[in-house]
Image (tube, rainbow over all chains, first blue to last red; front, side):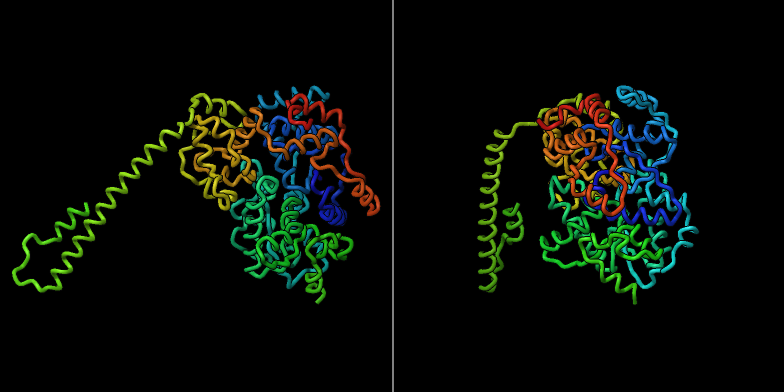
Length: 284
Length: 220
């Protein structure tokens, strides 16, 4: 689950659990997990490798694959998993650190993000079958984020220059997914603490392009991206004197609505930008 | 140049029956060209003087040829040598689009040339969002984002750390999470029927931070 979701974006977790239960995905809680280490990668790479390797070892001990809601965690755990499986020297170094806490990385499990898992393990047919209230008439734009598909040699899934899987998953719910300029661009969340002007400008460009094509909502799969577009939207509006009023939903919330859950169950209330317009559109 | 140009357009022999208007125009043009030429000569002299003055105050940056090896020795920094400065990384970079000082291509070139102090002390280095677009698109397969990360790691080893990273490391050391999650959140989870948050074995996490050299980053 990572650090950002329990702290500020619990709506993602709530909606994801509801969706998983209906799709028959069994989640095993891992009470001993720690931060994947991505936030501190710029300062000490070894620390990140060690922290993510610890999580991988814990999952290996229970012989379970890891599914993450946060794309940052997905890329870190996935990358560490692949690097340690392929690079013997690095594996030795990291196992040296892990020895200090009595663990050893063996490389027996896989790491997938929610989107990849839904496409590959649950399957398109099953999701289609679970949709009871198709969201026809709803036009949305998707924001994949950077870490879901990049770097391409570690993601092994879809194509960062032309992301199609998330679009396909969105269209399964009955909503129409629109294309827009800057679709595969970053949201800028990572440097908001260093230079917020750059981040806010980035996010504003994306919101403008999405509004230009007439989307009624925006779909994200990463909690950090969601924070940037939802929680910071009023700040961007004030800083640049614009008015977006664009609801930002997690993909699991969109899918949950299509499956027939009502908005309260999917924690739609917790969104900063009021999504009631969408709910009206769907009732009509 | 202008003088010669003006001369060439200036007929050496005036026509015998030149109309007065043309004579007037000819003379005016000559005067203007001559004035412009004088100003430009004087201007150039002033420029050269200023250049001479400034060059005395600018110190050439110190070059350390072993710096690039230092970078390439680190994990994921080996591809620095393949960069041939095409600029694809900078044109793909979301930060470079909005910042006037951040250019991945420049940073990599400075690293290749060994401008150690300049690179490690630059603020722009910390503006990388780690989106990996540069790495994906580089025609030489240089792992640009990873090389930048190595440079940041080296800056930290030299004592330069933005405050936010100290906070994040301390938080992981003390709670296992990058952010300090308030009690209210735990209560809310219980109320909404969510399982309790994972609580990492803090002794293990602290040990890992210590073994990997992260203790220096903790807040004092």
